Amino acid sequence: MRLVLLGLPGAGKGTQAKRIAEKYHLTAISTGEMLREAAKEKDTFGLRVQEYMNKGELVPDEWINSLVKSRLQEKDVENGFVLDGYPRTLQQAKMLEAYLQSQNQNLDAVFFLDVSQDTLRHRLAQRGNLRSKEKQGNSQIESKREKIRLDDKPEVIENRLHINKELMESLIHFYKERNLLYVINGEGDFDNVFDNINEGLLSVNK
Ligand code: ADP
Image (cartoon, rainbow, N blue to C red; front, top):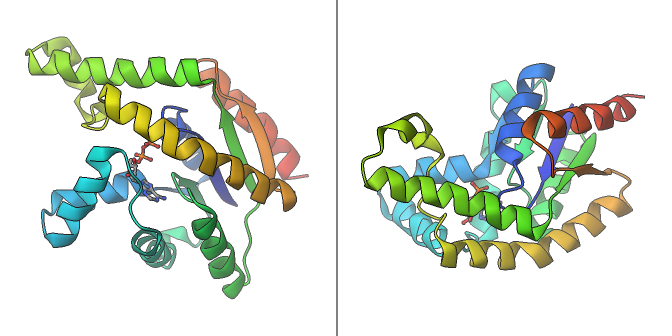
């Protein structure tokens, strides 16, 4: 299976992508994680990526397209994938479509995790709070360290939501036209949302 998870920042794509990948033996590909790894290198490319991410802006399509294209050529992707955080623009969606077509492949389904703006703000602010508590040395949240991100600051959160909202509408339209779109209620807890996705997947396989 080749799947895409769409959702605004805070919709829970990362968590769900990992669960789907595990259950269906697919490879989860998160462009956010790929970019955070690239940024760690602190070379010219990494530093520029970090600048975009710090502002909550998208990195240029050409950069992310070429990263994704080479990732899709790796061996572990042969049996299927679930993409998290990609595509985010129409240009990216078109590149993905063209690339898959060139390989005689296609997407099986696109799940949009539908979550209200209020819930998104709340979830992202909680991630941000964890971060500032950690700075004060709270050991209880030590285990959540990996979830803490520099772009979960209030001003950056607003920017991420704003930038992605309109783009999301165009992506939804793009995949609806291709009959690939499944709208998933993403409001509940992670188990609930996972159940909703699994229900959607049952109809994909029919
Ligand atoms: P979120 O969706 O919660 O913002 P991600 O981890 O998916 O988090 O992405 C973090 C950042 O990485 C984004 O704000 C953006 O700067 C960059 N990024 C991730 N995926 C893409 C993409 N497909 N195109 C452009 N930029 C991206």
